[in-house]
Length: 311
Image 1 (cartoon, rainbow, N blue to C red):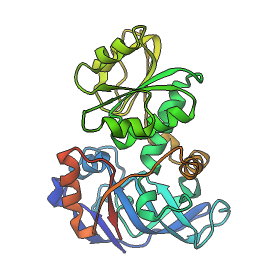
Image 2 (image 1 turned 180 degrees about the horizontal axis):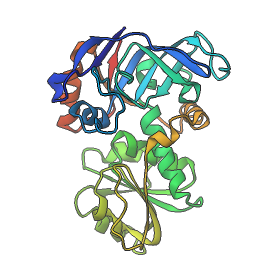
Image 3 (image 1 turned 180 degrees about the vertical axis):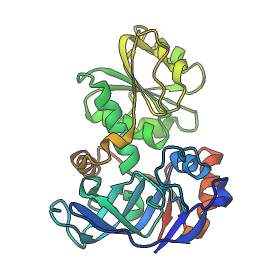
Image 4 (image 1 turned 120 degrees about the vertical axis):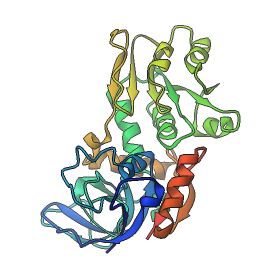
C-alpha cells in the first residue's frame, strides 16, 4: 500500500511516497481504504522529528496525518458502529508508519464515523481532528449556556470550529480576524469581531470590559491572551501551555488524543454538519507525490480551508 512519509526527518522535501504493508485487523477495529487525508500543522512537526522521542516506533518510515476519510473494507469482531462499504471519516494518532497519509489504515471503531450526508471524502477528512479538538476545548471549559467565549485564530480550522460549536452551545462569541478574514469569521457565526494581533486581549476587553468567561487560543499566543479573560475564567490552549502560574484563570491544555476514540463526539460533529451548524472548508487538493508542496503551502500561511492529499 502507498503512503506518504519520511525515512529521515527534515523539511518538506523529506516527504516521499513509500510502500507500507497492510496493518493487521483486530477485534473492535475497522480497516479503511483511505481516499483523502487532511494536512495539518502537527503533521509538519512530525515530519521534522519533533515527536520522535515519544514515538515507540524507532524505524522508518514515519507517516504523518491525523485526519482521513474513505471506505470501510473490513471490520473486526464486535464492530457495530460501521459496516463494510460505509463512507467514513476518522481521526488518527500517528505512530511510526501508522498515520493518515496512507491508503490502508486500521483504527479502533471509536475513531471512525460515517461522513456527513452530501459530503465526499475530501471535504469530510478535514473535520475529525480539528473538530474534536474544538469540541474538547469547549468541554474542558464547560461554560454555562449564555457565556461569552473569545476565539483567537478564528479564521483557521480549529478556531473556525470553535466559533461554530460555541454558537451551537448557546454562547456569545467574540473572535479575532484580519480585515481580509472579517467577513469569513462573521459568516462562521461570530457575534463580535476584533482585529487580530499582539494586542488582541486589549481589543477584547474594549468590547467586554469585565473580561470574557472563556477563551480558546487557536493563534497560540499563550500569556498574551490571558488578560482578555475575567478573574476565575477559563482558557483552552492547543500546544501544551499551562498558564502563568498566577491562578487567576484556569488553563486547560487541550490534547485531542484524549478524544481520539470518542465515537459519540465524532458522530455528533457529523450531525452538526448535516444540520448546517458546522461547515466544511477545502482550500486545495494534492496528489501523494505533491505532499512536499502541500506542506510548503501550509507553512506559507494564510490558508483558509483544508489542504488535502487524495489517494
